[in-house]
Length: 298
Image (cartoon, rainbow, N blue to C red; front, top):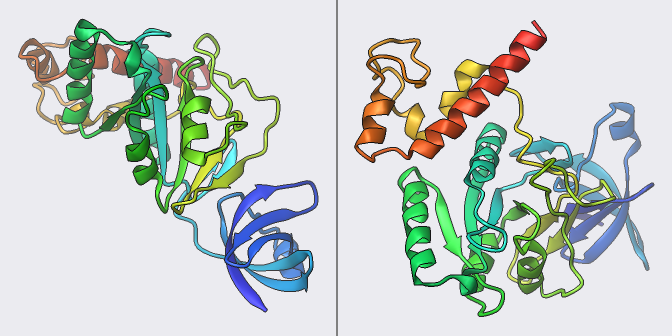
């Protein structure tokens, strides 16, 4: 009997595959091992059932991947939700922009979630709406949530349907509580990232996928950090900031890096409130980091 299914966990000697028949403990066919073919959590695979009680199988083929995040290794990730708060802890826009930069480098759709909105007063809510508009204007979807009032939970569930989703954010943002609402598992815990060092709080390193009742999976991705941005050539950093990418070639000088050079269109647009100045500041910080890395290893 042959089935197709999704690899949802890597164990020491087996892969756990979610199939229409149930979860199947699987090994890898010899020819795949011989060819040194890696199978990752998130892979869609074909397998042959070799035992029905308990369900056991042998993976015979791997379907083409749409994406592969290497550290930690997870295939076919569709999107990542970045969980932030305005209060408790205060909103860290620099970390958010670093997260968004990393997602674009990895080719992942990013959705911004502003959690704990039940803590906001009227002035806080107005300020949040201004921030949301900045990110909506450059193409990012934003969602407001509260695990206390259940605000936004149904929207998150709908956005996760039939996709493989990851959740990330700084410590204290409430990811685990939100995810327990989505997965309906109060014991669920996902690693958080420290704002000081960008490292997750997990002690394990393997990835697992949690099936959702409505279809799709949530990836528990220990060790993943979007704060520690991936290395790219500094001249490519502009391309990962949407509001800057669409202005390439509009400055007086072709080599303008939008750092205050004469005739820089970005300076003009910031003065006209068309571009957020803090986003340009965060772009320049990443640009200079990439430049320093290149010089260090030149």
